[in-house]
Length: 334
Ligand SMILES: Cc1cc2nc3c(=O)[nH]c(=O)nc-3n(C[C@H](O)[C@H](O)[C@H](O)COP(=O)(O)OP(=O)(O)OC[C@H]3O[C@@H](n4cnc5c(N)ncnc54)[C@H](O)[C@@H]3O)c2cc1C
Image (cartoon, rainbow, N blue to C red; front, side, top):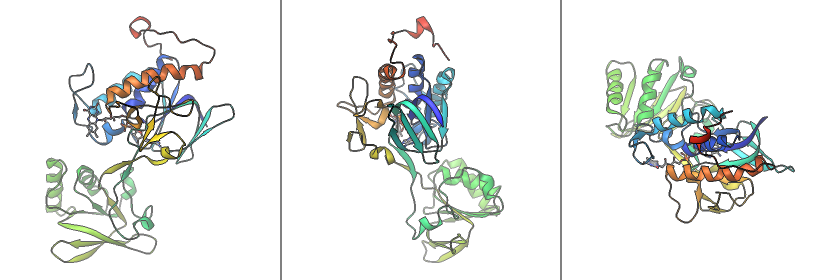
């Protein structure tokens, strides 16, 4: 079991900055995110886009800001569980919490900070009969370890960056890669699209455009993907794996089941300290709601600072908090 003063749910910019603000007050954090990497929406949706409203940075990309935040919190040595979703939060008799993730990891903490943003990003799935029966038996919505596909016949569907990038990567690993795309132009980076076209021209992968996937074949284990060509013909492509890459969509997920006072898909908080209806549970960043709420990174940073000062009394009930400027006391790292 992992034990920490504070468990932060969500490694987006606000969850990461909460590590800094709580660290200044000598509270240790464990951070959990369902995504395999830190950075929340910045890494998942717009890593290369410039952001213009971060104080002190006239212009910084999502990826750069996440890198700076990771550097800023490093002195406080946070621990991370990535690629796992927090499913349950249960209060113990001594008022601490046990959090359980989708992979069965258990975290004990005195305070829970929900920085869950828009929720968990889930893959957009194609409408194909019995798709769920093949999930884990040939159908995957992401590529964690490309080596898994070595020697396989792989069908990828999609026209964005992920579909193009993984087509290029797997073309060098799999026995055969087929990319199926509805349109005749790609949404992904033009350079990548050109390289895919070049490999297709050289016979190193199969590119089927103006077509969509219709059904899967196989008994329990995938062995083919049905494709309908927009000209009228249809075919079945032999396949060990089918990877539809149509992007991700956020869903609130299990947070909605934790008995907190909610406003639609957001958690109602008290703006004095961003506490929720449950003592010792706070909600900061895009996940919370209060009159005048702005879903901006800088607003989440402010919320993290106030939350940290309030959470201090639960971690150090016998101590008084002293307000200290970092210019005077430094960061007082662990
Ligand atoms: C295209 C785009 C452009 C934007 N531009 C700007 C801008 O210019 N300036 C600005 O200030 N803001 C901008 N925003 C908004 C900004 O990205 C958000 O305000 C910010 O990401 C909120 O940070 P967060 O940490 O609260 O949440 P998020 O970044 O959403 O991170 C939340 C994390 O929580 C995780 N999570 C959720 N539930 C669970 C669970 N149960 N278990 C484990 N993990 C969980 C998610 O996987 C996610 O990684 C933009 C947003 C978009 C989409």
